Length: 153
Image 1 (spheres, rainbow, N blue to C red):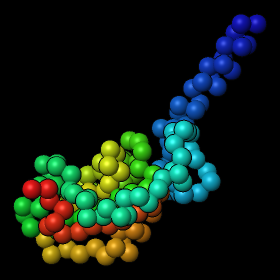
Image 2 (image 1 turned 180 degrees about the vertical axis):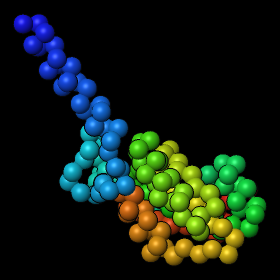
Image 3 (image 1 turned 90 degrees about the horizontal axis):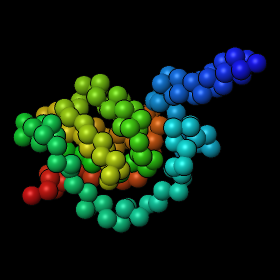
Image 4 (image 1 turned 120 degrees about the vertical axis):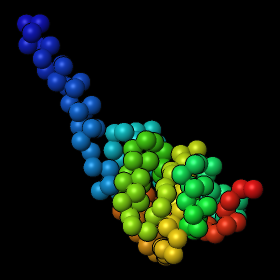
């Protein structure tokens, strides 16, 4: 009797954990009504646009890879991203932007919910292209700031 209960119980506990490892996060739409289990307790729709008013206060994260890319002549971009709350979010955006030919460095800061990019020297990325790539990762852009004014002194 115990063996009949043990195996289904173990399978019930193991299956959700195994399923989380096999999620293709890049195909998820965090703006939809569907919320995957790894985001339980996070309400992406409740995020506000308060930061829109303080767009000029966005600064490029203090990371060595970003600083080196800026020093090499790249253009810094910081995008406020709605719904960036966990390591899966970081992986999804790093995967999307890390394989782009026009991006020299990328860093996702969960504390400030920002995507920090430095384009390669001479490369361009329109706001529309950036928004489309963030959406491909499963998120929405609240605001975008660009240029040398993003570097905190």
